[in-house]
Image (tube, rainbow, N blue to C red; front, side):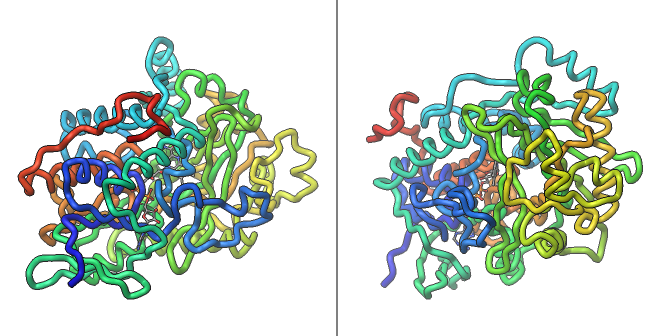
Length: 479
Ligand SMILES: Cc1cc2nc3c(=O)[nH]c(=O)nc-3n(C[C@H](O)[C@H](O)[C@H](O)COP(=O)(O)OP(=O)(O)OC[C@H]3O[C@@H](n4cnc5c(N)ncnc54)[C@H](O)[C@@H]3O)c2cc1C
């Protein structure tokens, strides 16, 4: 008879990892599954000098131990106001306690002590933003950079490997609830695992799979707003006014023409624009950004995302986002890049126009073209209005040389109906992280895994135990 695990976790991103840490430390029998590879074996061909995204299946950038966190910029936003719905789910006080706890674990696994977004001069920036029609939300932030984020997750993999069973390169196809309440999960190669509790943490990459399984199991899904936009790249010096004090500036704006919420997201000073493939069996190429501990380019990139809420009968936010991304893929074979000046002049960007520009694109594989063929008017108009408002706060952002890459879509648009301890409508099946529509970043994804683990420990009559590591210097020398 197959081994019955206390807990099986689908997805080894931050949500799955934090649940595993807590559960295995308390002595439960944990199985952690992911379709991607071990962290050291995750190598993106594009970052090794490839010309274009070759649609690896699964994508090394977002799949494998560490999930999408493994190549992330490692910005830990230490506030419940951004990065997910934690505050709505568990209240302000508990979300603060969870964020502090998650931060302490990242610190123990090697995160640096320095925190941005606190101190003097922040309120003067808030006032200047407000005069430009923008809302600036200063958040406390710790920055690991891609290298250190990767190292911390590697340390977590090594720590967990002797405490939990980790099965990588194992894609889960389906979930079944048995008559005795146990859960069965089946892999794409037909292997079956049984467990008492199941945690679904498949991230944005697995959001579509999760949606399909949820519908098959009769679970209720609601639509989050659809976030669509582009990645903006400007000279690093242009953004210094904000990035030197805040590192990441969370700016929000309501577009004049459509009253849509437009916001900046994932700012990467000295970073690079990258391509990623996402969407499981039917992937699309989208754009993202990464930053490093030390700047590697002279540019700063950030996303400008437009959130739109659709009304009935619309119920396919992920399909809609993929459809838009596919338009950019059809036009360019991957990602389009356009100078803002060319967009405003109603013409495409060309290799020659880009070469004449003082700002060199960090994503060499992006194809010069025309974003207005891929992004609906409503999105483009809102993005341009946002950049013009930002230009008042940070002169130069709406320069004609500013680069726009398209398109960026965030696939956390479907939200599972969950209790405050993140249990689905099926007893013993929980959902965490970005794929379930709970979080939008590393800290809240990690916190969501912790919430579930603590609930399972409570039901099992066990106490959460603290992790053995004692200091950042333990990195690489784990027990
Ligand atoms: C380039 C980039 C930069 C980012 N920068 C930041 C940042 O600076 N700060 C920040 O807060 N956030 C950042 N993020 C977002 C952050 O990485 C995510 O919010 C976080 O990783 C979500 O965690 P998760 O555990 O929910 O899912 P993920 O990290 O996406 O992990 C989910 C895992 O589930 C696996 N999976 C999916 N379906 C299946 C299946 N059927 N069977 C088996 N396995 C499956 C996937 O392979 C994946 O490894 C960035 C993301 C990217 C891509």
